[in-house]
Image (cartoon, rainbow, N blue to C red; front, side, top):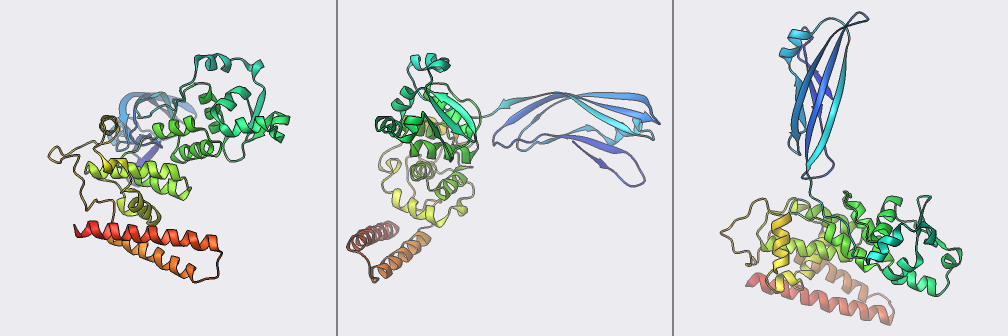
Length: 363
């Protein structure tokens, strides 16, 4: 809550109530009473109450509760006290719940604390779980229990690279318990990395399905995923970038795509299923449901433009040539036979990619 004084000579002020969300595309309805208690000396003189109802979103984050005219009527010398009473309701927020399809028996087992025979620790907090559940969802845990590792003998394991919140969400998902809340972008990535580390394919699929990519956030997501070296999610984001290009959707901050990502886009765009064939019905449904606020009906959505906005081909070619030069310099060094073979294979791939992009530009 803030107030603004109009000038030094006039004590009148206006009072504003602010509401912000850390998430995009959220609309919040505020219904509250703001009471101003005016004091003269030490005695309560009057109390002015105003009821306010409004909606907040990413563009509207403030509402004026009392104006200068109000204070002209009420203001007296002395102290005053503000009191706010009411509620905020999230009217619109897009989220796809995290969920894993599990047998109904798993949900019954979830309530059976006595049968949980394995302990997981994260950030010093404990989560109990059935070994049989972990064996079913993760090949890593299955092998751990089969070979009687230290963790198997002690019947516990510590997750060092994941928060307790995310660990609890993951374990609940194994039992078929959905997570309906919001996660930050980095939390989605960390949860996916955890699933990748322990080879939990259902959890990886759940994360990819729950992440809502839009033309407004895909660049931020892609760069963040690349920074965290999450290859499978990078491919997921790049496929979406290609899909946006195919629909001629305007992509926010497209100029901020990192060079590393641009090279991967160039590498993957010719392998992507979104390029090889028409977008299937399920993909069209996902785009219509989550993405475009506006769409140009005059543009054929199945037409691929060679000058896609997401890629500066000249810049990509320059980066590829730089990589090729680095490759050739490494080949001149004293290296092992295996390393030499790896570099030669990489050189062939780079040359093929350069020729392909150059050929497409000429067309």
